Length: 232
Image (tube, rainbow, N blue to C red):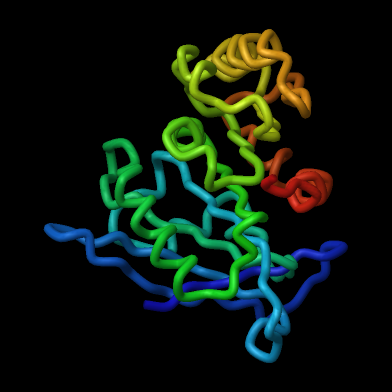
């Protein structure tokens, strides 16, 4: 099984940024993914940070090209180089929710087969993938050094299962009519009452609807913040 890695440093650009493709057998079905490896991965012996990106509801199915529509895969396809490995699976259900058990198997396989710094594994997702990111972090928080949900729904009871030391940065548009920004605002308020360290961050984009992913993932500060976090 092969996966792809992707690079970000100070946001460099390349015309040759490429994705590898792979899949993992989940028994009755399989999960396909894109993976991007940063420059120098093949000639280096070092371990690299890993970003697990979960796309939204419009990119599911069997056409992996759809995964490049938004978020970090879109930036990589446009030539951006990042200093981390990007693992971007595809939800095989076009209309259903992510298979979080399958994501766990994929992550296990990927970590075993690649040079990943397991103290620097980051989880992010947008819309339906944002909900999946919250859910995956709730079930297996020990895997991740940081969580970045973008315009994702979330059950507010999840705050009980989020550890107090998990760095979190949530992004949402103030005019989102599909997933109301109160989903993120209320969750952040619940988490802040737990006196988490570091304090959870919330960015609200004024006048922005459901597409909070463009301003979020186009901001180099998001990646700088993620890469500064380490699992203890």
